[in-house]
Image (cartoon, rainbow, N blue to C red; front, side, top):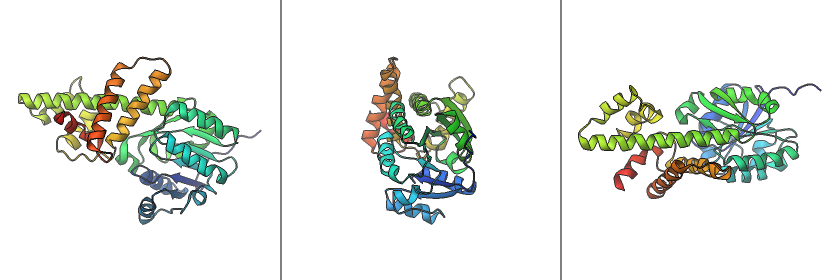
Length: 295
């Protein structure tokens, strides 16, 4: 039997979820030549997408009916399951669903089993890099699932990301994303605590950042967040505190589910969830330092 062809332009791709990441990622697909149609539950999000030159469907059926590939970019796995339940009656035979949200890995496997049984492809492919890298199509993509399905949609993924990492079976991409964000969040917490102590002692935060970046304390926050968002208090990275807290909990719960002790992840989960509750769902994750200062 001949292998199924890869999904290349001008194939139809539906993007479900037109938020901070969905809009620029859909735009990258459009630039690559795909026939993109977007959908979001919020009329305002659909309108912003249309104003930016995209084509928005008024409902889920209209978005996915012709699509060879449907990409979900939603807040969590529960929202993805709800969206998939809505779209399933309208999917084209053999369509491939790519969950690029930050979902729970075990939930992803359960949903995948249902879609596979119904004759649809399903892989998880969350991303890292934030709005800036979504805009210039240089995201890191962590993809899990059946190799043959990934082979078919690799051109789609490559249109949005600079590096595509095949992490293993279904759910492994979501596991990697949650664990990556846990490490990132722990590093941010350590960096802002260190800056708070140093500033109180009389050190210049800018000089501290330079030293950290030339020393063993260097991490993603010291390189890409301290001088850019935290020290000038612009707090505009494009990734919310609530989403960071959610991803840390996902990592912690995954450890518990498979019997691996994660005491630091438990502490980070508590800290970040308290910070998100105090500053509200719209707070940028780089505002974590404000939470520490107020404790």
